[in-house]
Image (tube, rainbow, N blue to C red; front, side, top):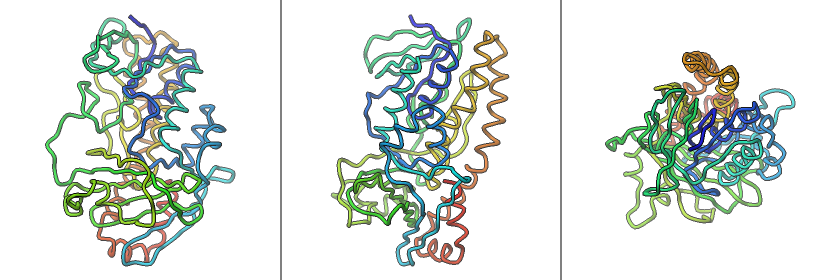
Length: 374
């Protein structure tokens, strides 16, 4: 049986960031990550400037920048039947980095390897099967794979960093839902081709939107988000699902399409049954603003400061609620507007392309707003 100060369920950017921060603060940390790395994941792979600043603070900035694609300095909208529009991507402040892109299989491995170097114990592949309240914290039943013998971990605090769309047995995981027309589905592919220099492209269409960003060396990531009913209208019998939502024939796909969903943008409980939620398990923006990775890492930073201090002081019975109150206030202060704005921009992007194009053509400030959110 393992004992630790903090058990983190999920080893993506949020979970790995939390592991690094808590381990550097002298806390014993165990991370459960169900997938073996490297693994591909549905994600636009755009790391906003705020995310790069987090990576630098975590100690992996140089390694990220050596592997990432070129700086992104412009945002463009490619709407069918409309003029292609562009706007500069402003810096957060003088001297701040510009956004860049990196494959999730590389980014996730980079962060989790650094968590191990900082002193965290990573169990991978391993998944949490159940959490039980016990004296002094939680007992987590876990297993290396489905059907394998279970083992137990005792932790004073538990952090859910398992994302938001895959159902599971934990209270912080979403339930199985009946498919609905408004469900948001996501598709992703890696491509070969060229984009305008240092530009991220947003391509809106009725019921959805896509994004394209360069990762360097002629490599491009294509990510698409759309409603289930729009996907059913667009789907072409006999083609892979992703091909039905891919209008750019000047690119050559590398590897298989990935799909995920339904996505659940919005806010979820940040503290439930004694468990803290970070990353997409806490809340996520619509992907149109490209802030998902940065916000996931930021949520870990917001929690781990007060949590590390409380654990260092012995983590008495009421400490969890006190940490949760402080975390929730800071999370809503920093995340609330971005979630609201992402929903408004997603609603615009999902209008018929001709409508979105006309609106953006007469309101270039929209592009600037989208850029400032990145």
